[in-house]
Structures are given as C-alpha cells and as structure tokens.
Image (cartoon, rainbow, N blue to C red; front, side):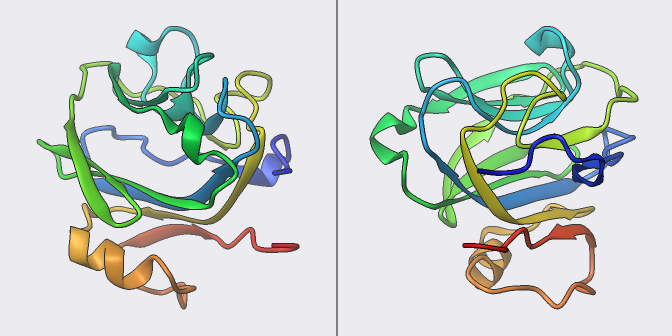
Amino acid sequence: SFPTRRSSDLVDLFADADSAFTVEFWGVMDSPNSNCFIGKGTGTEATRIFSISTTSGGVLRINLRGGTTNVENPSEAYNQWRHYAITWDGSVAKYYLNGVFVIDLPVGTASSTSHNIHFGSLSATSLLLKGKMKEVRIWNIARTQSEIQVDMNRELVGNEPGLVGYWKINEGY
C-alpha cells in the first residue's frame, strides 16, 4: 500500500488557493470506503482547501475551498487503476476521469490554510488511503483536456512548463 506518513510525502503547495492549478495522478483503491487520495486542511469540509476522497459509502467526493461535490460512486471500479485530474483556472474548476471531462466543480470561499498537502490521507491520521497512487503531478496552470490526455500515460521529464511538483511513486508497480 501507499506510504501515507513519510514527511517527504507532505508538501506546502496551494499557499494561495486563488491561483490556477492542476492536480493529476493515477490511483487505485483496494476498498472503496473512506479513502483520501490527496488532502489539504483538516476539520469540516467547509474549511478544507482541497481533497479528493471517498465517503464511508464509497462515493468519490472532491472538495475545493469548502465547495464539495459527490462526483461518482466508484465502488464498481475499485481495484482498477484510474487517472484523476482536477483543474482550476481561477474561476472554473473541472474534474476529468481517465482523460475525459466529467463535471464542473463548485468552489467555496474557504481561505488558504497553512496545512500541508498529504498524499494518501487527509491528514497524518485521517482517511488513510487503502490503495495506491503513482505519477502524482501538481501544476501551477489549469491544463486543458487535450494536455491531460497527451501526458497521462507517460512519465514526464520533470521540467515541463508549469510543473511544480512531480512524484513518480512507481517503485514496485
């Protein structure tokens, strides 16, 4: 399973929640219930800055600055690798699954926090991922659907324009 509590897995990005970004990664859940792929902030959903998690009922939920959307019930898709991408251009947020646009996402008004981003959990002890992640990429631009599709099935060089964080996490996969 994914190492959820190493200090090197914590990064302090999205210090300014109004800036454009893209977060994308490959993920697989061993169980569809109560997981978190990526999280920033703790407490109630209204005060979180960013999270991609599942509910206890297995519904995938995306939270951007306190705006929360249930986007799908992936219970039939667990144990399958899937590519997730969320983009924010400063006014519109979008969710893509396997390179295909799914839905525009609501964005709340929660202000930026000093919390780190956690890969594989919401916090060091909350909603630990029962599964794996790889090819985690964080960009300081809102990537287009075609840009996501072109790069989602290949390893990056690491110096692509706008790429600010890149973790292959591919050992053993």
